[in-house]
Image (cartoon, rainbow, N blue to C red):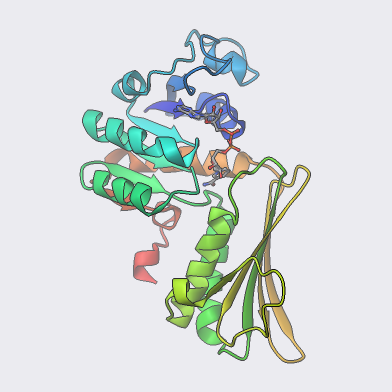
Length: 270
Ligand code: NAD
């Protein structure tokens, strides 16, 4: 399968290039960067710390999608829209790891998925997807006497907050409780905000150092607390998951899928 990587000089982009080059059944179709990026013209593999592969980094997303069977996109939310357009134009499967999309951007991804298979996951790690399933299950078992709080910590370079994964966990908790997340979520509390409201789901973000990603889901009751924790120690969990999703998408029909589908425990059936 020919796999293209957008944002190939980025932190995740470089890991994805390495993962594609070491995974059986994959070849690297090329890599792009944003206009004006200083890696343009450099060798895609060399930029990722490997021996040269003869493919130069370009800013031509259209050409990358034309050359690839599937493109993996870990860039920035504002450029995903053009990538979904190229995906539809060339019938190229798309794996989206980028987070922080607004409603309009999410709608354009959904619209494109009527024409091509798209896998979009806020987190491509196997462990986190198990955490999604457990959070939903526990939120359904424990009643509102247990306050649900979600706390995430990431490295100092992350530009969006809270993390897409934390939002996904809040959604899983809301689904388990059978409530509308938008009405029940309490984000980033600050100041004299009054007592905690029963049934609400708290969401807080912490930033610092080189933390790859930590997510805690706390169910806090009277005199007892249950805590589900996931700690990522290497970003490889995301690149391995994304390449797995790319291979999985090969024979899929058009649609919007997530990592739970790839792993075979689809949220659609929960
Ligand atoms: P990064 O800033 O290191 O990399 C993003 C890259 O995209 C940069 O190199 C940037 O120049 C490039 N880019 C910008 N505009 C572009 C364009 N028009 N065409 C091609 N490339 C372009 O960021 P990162 O840490 O690698 O994270 C990237 C995204 O992936 C973020 O949204 C992050 O939250 C997300 N992420 C998701 C997961 C997951 O499992 N879903 C895991 C880790 C990171």
